Length: 467
Image (cartoon, rainbow, N blue to C red; front, side, top):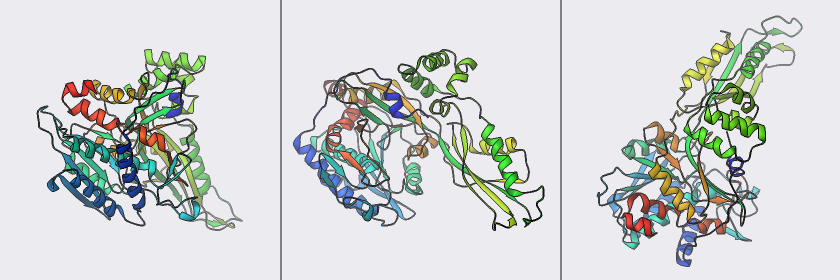
């Protein structure tokens, strides 16, 4: 896969320009974030319901009627739905706005500051879930609250769908999908976003329009074993090793989509001469063998041109002086959108061509197609970003997955991740890790992002144009 930073290196140099929120808006958003971080909305602590209750109170206080605020329980967690009713003048189905209230666990002993207390130090916020994804939840919440208080009436329904277990089982996500799959499309706060290299630097924005399917297979070889002093031909470890070597040597068929080609067009601007020529040749003639020979050598490019599978874990044997009775390997695959996981499993078995090797699917994969980025959606998002970076170049991308968007895409709801967050090249947000952090200026700079998108897609055209 082509990383965001690799793509950003291809963008022409532009100057940064910020659109500042008012001090009152910044203060309100900060207050929301302080409360958001304080909730231990992790699988272990289980405070997602408390977080959802708090958010529901904020929406009620802003004027959202109780019947338009709904809790959706699934498993041990809960999701939150908030409907911003429109006047129906557009005649269009609702737009969904996605985020997740849960976060991964954090051990206070490993952190410089209490992970569940928002701390500011040297212009940087610290706290668990700041970037993944309480920033998105707070950003969408303050946008809905601000628009409601201002008297804004959308031309179609706008629906917030905050899941409560995106980091674990995604049970609330599935429940939300069943309830809201009549939407025209969804905009996700949990991915996408931009790179800001500062004054005179590179500015790039990435719209996530596809995610590879994540799936792992366990390969196992079994036999009766025996004493190591009497080796024999049917050694489970050797047999498994032979199967893995076949998988190592195998490449899945070449694939591409519009997202791939648009990403290549951007990367070609900064690639070395040989790679740039191959990228342009591939764009002009997708599947070109000469171009592919060059591009396949680049791991980041090869990863977006096909399904990939790689061995990641290995175990076998039960004693150093005994022949192994079992040998097991885990093979992790990232499946190209539109390819069935069952077909990948069958293909691996065909490549191995050994009936002694058993294949088992370890997780429940979520297969989802790529979403086609429409001119209307792209224009709304890009115009919102250009309010801060007038000459920014935006490009759709595909990533390994997986966000809540996988489930919505699978249900037929086109989904695009368009976070308001811009990071700098030297930022280390460290989400899922110790001392997760976010620059205060980056937090404040995006507070107008979602309102601009909403007014472009669901507001009076004159208001959107004059924004």
